[in-house]
Length: 110
Image (cartoon, rainbow, N blue to C red; front, top):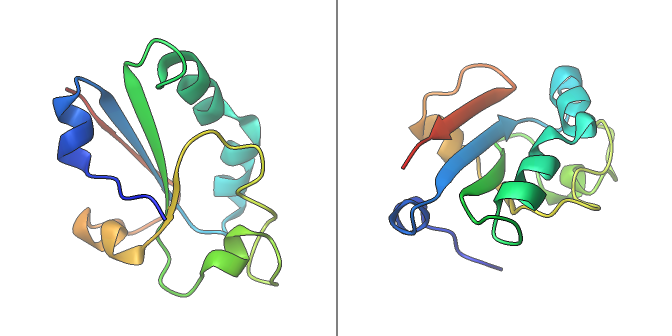
C-alpha cells in the first residue's frame, strides 16, 4: 500500500539498490536467502545510517503476490517474511530497465 518514488529517494541523498528477480528463480532465491540486502538495509537504510534504500522488485509478469508469499508452485519460498525493505510486485519496472535475466541488481548512486 506504500508508494515509492525513485527520484524522491535520490533527492533525500540515498543510494538506491534495485533487486530485480522472479519468485521461480533459483539463483535469485539463493541470493535472497544470503540476506546481503537485508544487512545493507538494516545497517545503511532508514533505521541505520540512512544512506541507502533497497527496493526488491518482483519483475516477472507471470508471477504475483501469492508467489511472493510462497503459496504457489511458481516460487522458491516466502520472499516477504523478515525482510526490512519494500517488496514491489510490478513487472513494468523490469521492462523500464530492460531487464532480460534474473537476478539483476542495479545500484543507482546519488
